[in-house]
Every structure is written in structure tokens, then in C-alpha cells.
Length: 91
Picture 1 (cartoon, rainbow, N blue to C red):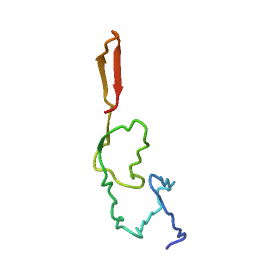
Picture 2: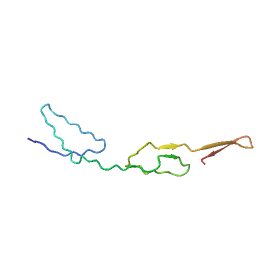
Picture 3: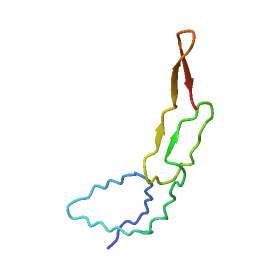
Picture 4: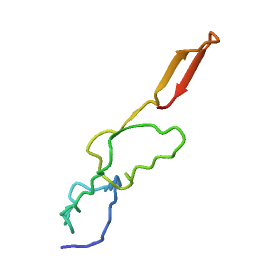
């Protein structure tokens, strides 16, 4: 005989903890066992950081297939006629 019936909606990493007595019976009915289709990120996974521009990659609420790799900004050093070093940052 059912004595209590209630609905609990769990999201993301929510945890449900129940305290049951040894003679209690727990019945669980899954209302929607089919997971929604996954929306995968389709943009670049490897890029060089921008020097003056903001880069936004549309990854919010998307599943990632791989890690994103951010390459360092290229730095080139050359000697100059005054005996110093000229540094070029970026391409």
C-alpha cells in the first residue's frame, strides 16, 4: 500500500539522499528515461591567443569532444645595429 507519493526533479549534479528503515520499500519510476540530444561544440579546438582582440568561443551549454589548446603568442628576437635586441610580439 502506497502511503506517500512525491515528485523530485534532479538537475546536473544534484544528489538525492533518502533515509530508509530496514522494512521500508522504495519504488522509483523514471518519468523521462531518454536523455535530450547532445549539442556539440563545432568551433576550433586549437588556436593562437590574440594580442589585442577578444576571442569568444561559443562553448556555453555545449559538449566538448576534446580539450581546447591555446598556443602562446609568437615572440621573435633579433639583434639591432645599436647592439640591443628588438623583440617582435605576434606575427
